Image 1 (cartoon, protein in one colour):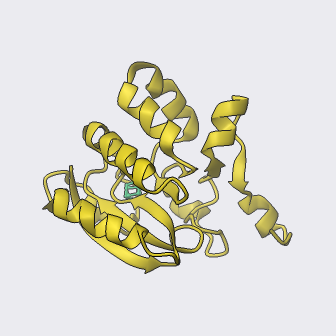
Image 2 (cartoon, rainbow, N blue to C red; image 1 turned 60 degrees about the vertical axis):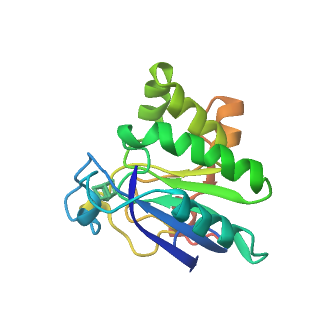
Image 3 (cartoon, rainbow, N blue to C red; image 1 turned 90 degrees about the vertical axis):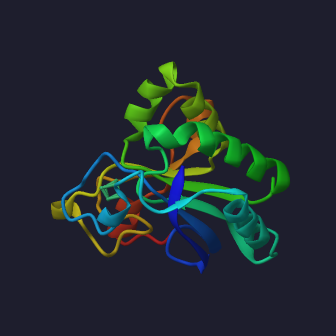
Length: 181
Ligand code: SF4
């Protein structure tokens, strides 16, 4: 797996101040994607031990709420095996920190894919929050929390897996209707 950046004290990609890993590789190619530079899986830096240590160092800080995976698509098929091993280590070292993950796949597509993909199955079980779906320009709305377009959902992964239905962590429809969350 390769990556483009590791950003720190990030307030835009999940709750609290987070460390964000921007992975390489994305097959969705959404129109008007703002990160097209990350599409090619061969671009960027090798995600090596030094990069992992850089993330662990951030997660050790009290004020760091957790790790967000973005990209690119962290769930790009070729990333999954390596990502799973990394997330196992993050969970082991930092059980109290949350893991959020952006992806261009929908929740429903991932549930289907996990039947034949043990790496994906393992990754989903380690996530707290999944932000799903492609960016759709005509559904873009700057008022949405943490996502770019209204087709994208912020999903509570643990509850959704346990209750076998998609349960939202933050409901952007309520926010658009003016409800406080
Ligand atoms: S899934 Fe994300 S990175 Fe991939 S093309 Fe769509 S907006 Fe860009």
